Image (tube, rainbow over all chains, first blue to last red; front, side, top):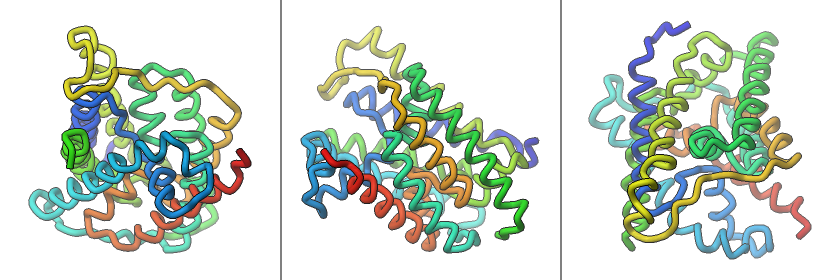
Length: 153
Length: 135
């Protein structure tokens, strides 16, 4: 069940939580990710959906959050990772098709693993709990189907 | 850069470091979780949610407002059909690719250049959501 142990998982999760908590305690903002796509598109598209007041207010800090995520992972890879930089071997079509559904679905659901999974659950939101159970359940079924039909890697 | 954005940047560094440290930035690790081979990833979301639980529910008992301004407001969204339909679509994408928004963006920092394809696809997906919004 835990072939790699649980320590690094727990430490990594706690560090991510410390980052989200730091942001919340100092600014009241929830460090959630999927809105980043919508607010960033407000620079490129004139559609009302993207030009909502809230998107325009949030688009700066959400960009900084994304830059922070990249920097944090970069610092880990340069200074702490035993294996250094890393590249996935998951096939490109899976990244493309999966990414399309992730972008669309999280924006319809208005939350993702961080929005519903971290901030929503931490806020004891039953809406987020339902969303987490659905995306986790569907993802488990999907990933197993993909494996069963023999898509590798 | 104002103080709010600086805090968000620093918090984001912790967040991204944690995701990379845990291995969640590796799509293979996420897929091994979803295929129920290594359940450790549950501790990433669990650990993060637990720490954030204290920030959202306990800290505001001692601190009236966020230190740099703004308001403490838990993240509670109303239930709707869209929440569930969207979560199901997200689940299919997550299961196909092992990517979610935060881990994909952080994964760029680990030198994982192919993930750019996934991130661009996420932008296209988010744009398609906007096209469906007739309001």
